[in-house]
Image (cartoon, rainbow, N blue to C red; front, side):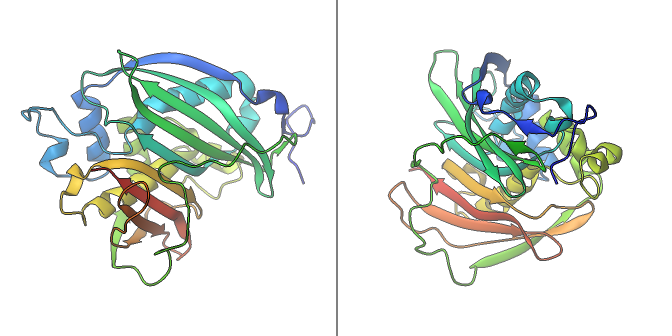
Length: 301
């Protein structure tokens, strides 16, 4: 049954939201933000913290979610009532890094609704977020897919088939046992720490009352935090570690990650692909269900 707003009107996202855009919003990246994000993930490599390095501290590959989040809030505030927005959970993520963000960057980000689709758990909406530097050069492009649980939407034509780094082209190398596996402890306070360090505020991750009102069993770990932890473990298996040149990341989200709990991350060795070396990974929640599915990292030269 489709839930209703306090007014008694069924919750529904209209097709008119398609192509609604916000921005540009300008933000400055500094070392403090980069280091805080890495620290929230339990990183300890000097690349993430040594400010004496000639190029400054390294940005974690998923750091773009930090400066993209305000645009997600802007566009949701424009098109979604609060009772719908609070039902959003992260469902898919696809990031292309044209170059890593750096301390001192003045970045301008825009966002638009790129897709809207009716699915059995709820309305699936994709935001396309594009970020450029002060000179107008591309830095990152993200397709951020959310499921609004129990919310209906108007039917709209699907977008044309995609393509590009990180997109699935074949099942080659996708099956078989993983080459490595490791466990990551999820502390009971991780969602609160990640919220403040990433500057990503969504109360379903830190406020039990809000999470339960949204139909969740309790607060859950951010999808971006779960993905970032899995990426960190995957890069630790690369000879260059955190310095591995990440060009693209893609995944689907599945099971919720409770706090506290344990996350099992497993992956495979890099294999050639048309876009560059491709590394597959996944993360399993404590109950054995996949929290991150079809994880893929495309490495650059």
